[in-house]
Image (cartoon, rainbow, N blue to C red):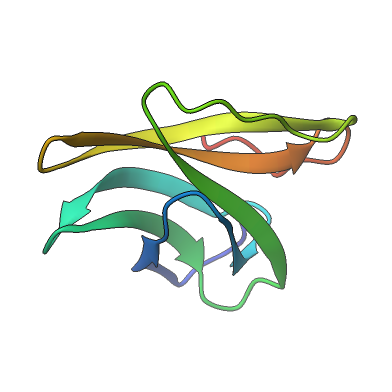
Length: 102
């Protein structure tokens, strides 16, 4: 990860669409959960690292989806909201995707 200082930010995500979020390449998703009835993702990042658009998608259990050729969907976490279970994936390039957290 880039040199500090570090911070943890939270991001709210929408179901079924791709949410582009400006984050450093090596920012690490720490947790996905519901907060106040919304799907929320907490991310650790360096305040001064260069940011790029990283794409996240929320899908319900049983929902089908596909990614374009040359891309992959990396699992980030699951949130339980009422009777629904939502899964968050980051859509990444298979060649130049962001570094995995250590």
